[in-house]
Length: 366
Image (cartoon, rainbow, N blue to C red; front, top):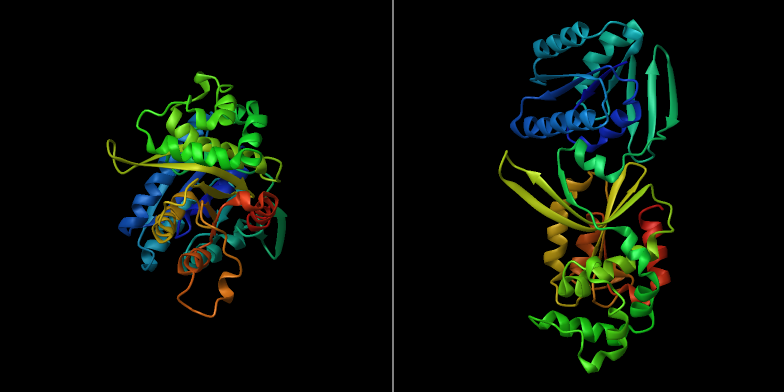
């Protein structure tokens, strides 16, 4: 099988097709525009795919072809380039999902009459349409990219991932802290956050201290960050782990390299993969956070995850109901801005944890 991938604006839409057919591909041709930002993104995809192939010992010949998408001569050269690397036109599959219409039109009119296949990926329904001759076949994509491989294919290095077994190991303690001792634990966490060298022996928090002593030091990276952040992430994970996702990871730190030395680090509390869409839950166990700032921050991070991924941000603020029904158009602006950008901004989930879980389930289509 020869796969032609045309890179456009929604780069993550090409990856599910590659992952679906990876075991059948022998030649892969990646086509992209000569615009600077397109070159940078295409290079990341190229590097990521080569690393992925090496990881799984995939014997795939990968070629890249850069074009001026506004030049008919350049498109004609592209057709010749594809011809050069194609032995059997019936085994040629052209992924048109992300390409501009002029590229897709020219390539389609040249290769469809030869019995080649045009692929279109419906990223909302996770389906593939394949057009050959005068017929179209539609079927569901049954292979879902794991979270680690999603980042690998985009040339984003996964630095570390927290161990989910630790959350399961201490499940009873976590449920007790957040559901039976929450008031005391919240005060204890605030005390820990404000102390440079916190001690777990403060007599004001004897019930929490008793529970905290059951956590083994080898499972704790740092007392302060573990108590004020990681425990809450583990708890939320435990409440969601039964939902219908394809992959879930907690405490994921990544590096997106700008060049061979410089990189931008990011950390994600909970990542959920569902039907080849990567979603995120950010857990902020505090009221001391500016809602506008955090919404803007994660608006900027969306492209690092998935063009069509959704984000849920959990804070210590009170939950606001019927945000869009407010008479005052300037009221609840952070919440409205969040919803407009596929971000669900939530207050304290412990006000009604079951309602929170249901809302997450519905929001991420789990």
